[in-house]
Length: 136
Image 1 (spheres, helix red, strand yellow):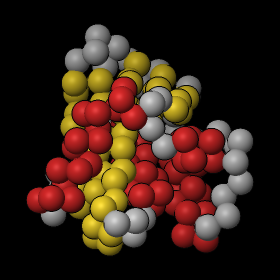
Image 2: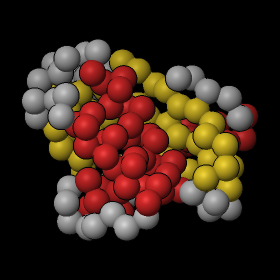
Image 3: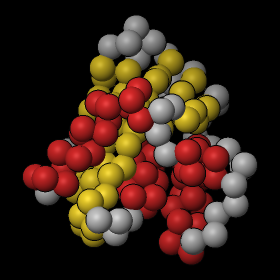
Image 4: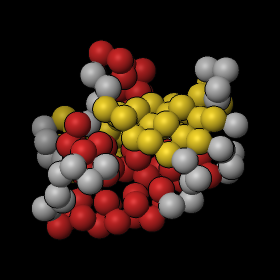
């Protein structure tokens, strides 16, 4: 099984009320899971990492051959892919958790996409900011 995951984190105020969302699709482009939640008050970058972490936790149960994760956070994608250094202490912790979870997958890639191509995940993350509840 191949998984295609769209993730997003959002913060109103940065820092401000924050949420995350992710959608997991199989190789037939069928939606197999949709989750998200309210994170409280935090930054957009922290919310992006929580979206990644929670999506990786959810993806493990499918035991996929490969995983492709799509995110509109160029900073996070470049940090995870080793192109940028992680300087923020809180982000360093989330980065370490993310990298540890990534080790659970045989083949994984994390790809930057423009915001226009990530609207469903963005809408999901923002919906949890407004409703302050969770699906995870």
